[in-house]
Length: 159
Image 1: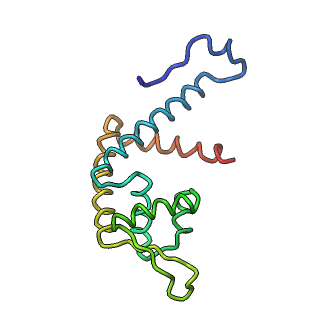
Image 2: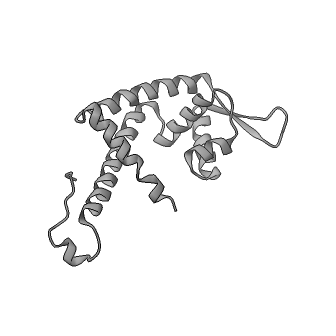
Image 3: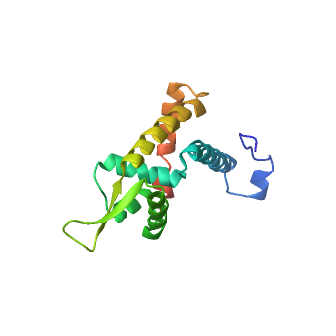
């Protein structure tokens, strides 16, 4: 796909009341997001984790202590069932382990293992270096401006 995506000159006639620039913005943001997600997935592949798995490791690393699955679910904005699947995969690789809460046996806590902590550190370093390369066509000022502009959109996208 070649970016930027541009809308044809007959857009206004075909879609009265719509905005060609709004459509171009949305399409270009979506296409760029897809490309970045593909790059992130490829960058994480040598670590044997998916982008979501990498986020789980990062959440646990940042927490600095074992966390209940609902804590992870809330931060990823996904269902507990999705987190369960991610934790199953990470546990099979020895990156996390589950244990009963010491004072509430009904609650499970997720622990980041030593291997998981090491992978979290390594993958973050690798991704952050790659991010610098991915946005290298933009100056520092342009990066700041783009971040500020994108920051205006989420409040209008929440239903």
